[in-house]
Image 1 (tube, rainbow, N blue to C red):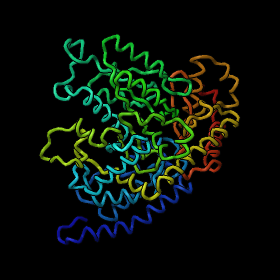
Image 2 (image 1 turned 135 degrees about the horizontal axis):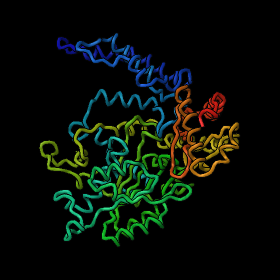
Image 3 (image 1 turned 180 degrees about the vertical axis):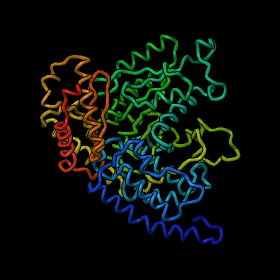
Amino acid sequence: MVSTDDHNSDAKELEVMLSRIQHIIVDYVQKGQEQLVPVVNYHTPEELYKLFDFTLPNKGVGLEGIFKTISSTLEYSVNSWNPRFLDKLYAGTNPIGVISELLLAVLNSNAHVFHVSPVLSLMEIEVTKAVGQLLNMGEKAGGILCPGGSASNLLAMITARNKLFPSIKTEGYFPRPFHPQSKYGKLKVFTSIHSHYSIDKAVQVLGLGLDNIVKVPVDHEGRMQVDVLEKLIELSIQKDETPFFINATAGTTVLGAFDPIKDIAMIAKKYHCWLHVDGSWGGSVAFSDKVMKTTSWLEGSEHADTFTLNPHKLLGVPLQCSMLLTPHEGHLLFAKSNSSQADYLFHGNEYDIGAGTIGCGRRPDATKMFMAWKYYGKDGLGGRIDKALSLASQFTSMVRERKGFKLVQDPSPFLQVCFWFVPPSIEKHVESLKGKEYSLCLSRITRHLHQQIQEKGEFLVDHSPLEGIPDFFRVVINAPTLSLHRDLERLLDVIEEVNASVDWSELL
């Protein structure tokens, strides 16, 4: 308990807690990775309120009481260390990730100004510079850490607006035709129909209006159609609008498609637009020499004005860890574009990274990426990606050959393996349906099977919709402990087992 009598009490209390928590955490991780416990002990919100004590007392519960709360928290939470957690674009972290979080908790630093976080500030500068150079952004590469990919995308759009139209920062947004003498028309944002919803959120925050996002169609692989992009930009200009921001996606959320960055960069340059790449999911492939040599996924990234990359996804760095990179003066670009006259905090030190953000307090998340790189090395991080890509290819082949399963994309574009399951007992009926009836029927099958699998808790997977096709299973291949036969083949078995218990005549 907190005491003011003994100035050494914190150290002693921490020693007791750390000694006790060590066994609990190691046991939790081990049981998760060995599938000795389910991914989640599934309960509804109503059930959880009965099982877990959410009350907040006037008097503290003490050491025994808080460890009961810790144990209950672990018991009823999702165990992301379990390789069968295949639901989202992240997996469990790793030992150095846990140690990094502990280090940050002990330091309790704020990475807004250099003098209160000297080492951590320089870690951020160096790790963003190094990642930018993996993207071929050159010696002036660098960046800044944000609290998640959505925040990085938002800061990218704010920076683009302030850099291209500095008067908006001071005078406000007054476009033509509402102000005929304005130097700009309605600002337009271009992004693919498969891009992340954070682009829509950013437009709302900037006050540009959702009607001023232009959603560009994609090809059969989910990549932005560059020829259509250019036509839409030209149409916008004809309307006396001002195209200013193009968002390309490196690894879309659902399918994992990579927009052709190099071709989009040429369009951005031609029409004087800011090119942003949302590589939250796929940008980390820059660590793989094999990917960079054998694919064109990130080709042209050096031409991006800003680039979002989330190490907490593919690289196993603990949530959250998202960096916004640029070839333009590194972190100083953001300070010059976005800083305010907060002289009580920022005193002109170019190492005060927080001057470039739209907030104040900053968690030093770059430390976690710095430590991971130090521990595993670039090759170790790249090897994690290569392993996941190989496993995704093998699983795609397994799904292709399995009766009743049908791939959405063949081959799978990236690390999301997407498929439908058509119950053999009603296959003829399902395939006889057309149009909306077919889509509705297959979506119902997917959703019902998905719900049953979630409640079992042995696996966590997701289902996704895409315009024009039925809902499907989306399995994300990421965790380095994932096994093709022990885990992924077992998932297909579970889907078949759940299907065998369903009377489809009552549900369809």
